[in-house]
Length: 117
Image 1: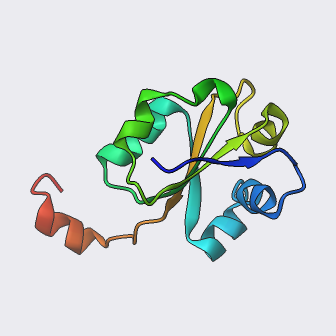
Image 2: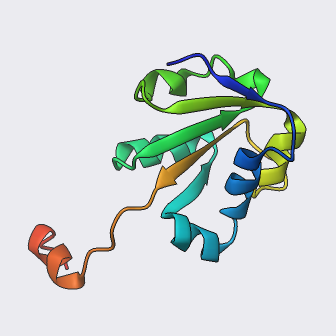
């Protein structure tokens, strides 16, 4: 993992861009979505979602999940106030990532790869 970048301001353009992903309009426009929580990020990795960036609070700096990330993933250490701005939870976790959306496959294509459909 590369050295994380630090973001402390809620007005940072990157923070605003991530926070906008809480709205479907911006998720569709950007082709990105938020995954929040270490378990949920592990599942995204398991299903080969492309993680573009990871945001974490200081207490998550040595989280075991970082060893699973590609070296090209940009990581950001953020203040608690910043993390709360783009968190979707009442009690935010310490990890959040931005993933690239995968193309939607049609039922025909799914049935070719999955005999249970």
